[in-house]
Length: 325
Image (tube, rainbow, N blue to C red):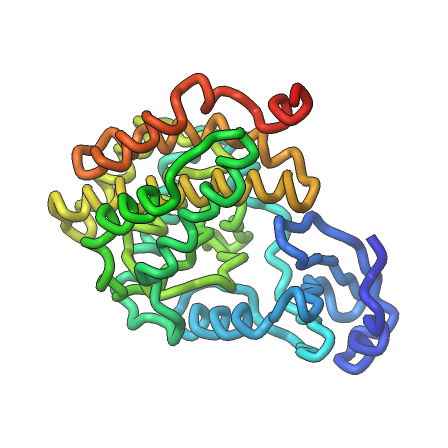
């Protein structure tokens, strides 16, 4: 992975002359990441967010908000917005996911700390950002109809699909009260040497419902979270903030909305971007979605899924169908 053009001049301008630049794992976007190492300055992470595909300004804005409210987001060292370059604090390599894979005995404590951050975020005035509103919810669930349904050769009535989700999501239409990080899960939480948890990949944050980040954490698309641990952590969250039946319904509804969206996104990453590995997550996503659809508040949505995507279709892979077709 070649470093971005103009990197040497950018680093030299900010005191990182002759630093070593090494690639690190990226994500599902056009962003790329490099570790910058200097004998005199130490280490930093370079985010390459090339325009017009990426815009680093939302990341910088949210990072400043989080750090200004005593959360641990990477400190911003230097920027070149025209080139999409951001030099930021290096949180190391100890992600929550890999740490728990190696140290399962830490699971309860680490998840409690992650939920503590959600609780504090809910009590903090929200960031200046766009609302997580009905139009956004509906646009996201359309990803399943735009990518997954055609990939699986499944037919449906688009107007009916839209109407069912509109009705289901209506209780949340006006609930924009807290900062929602949106991708708050075990691959975006770093365990720091000082015992704190660092947060990364938050540039898409909106203002919405506190249950969304709980869903993102406890119904993780990339890591198995047992139903028992999910239930235990929900009890922990409820004890901290106090919730009611409306919150439980919102949690299931936002879980169904998010998991529906993610199935569409992972299918798009395969179909459009050639990233077939994301299809391996679909069985987990279907398991999570089916648990959410079991809530009584989602009965009409469950009926639609049972009619149009029967269990045997959910166990099939779009790759296999396309090969056979």
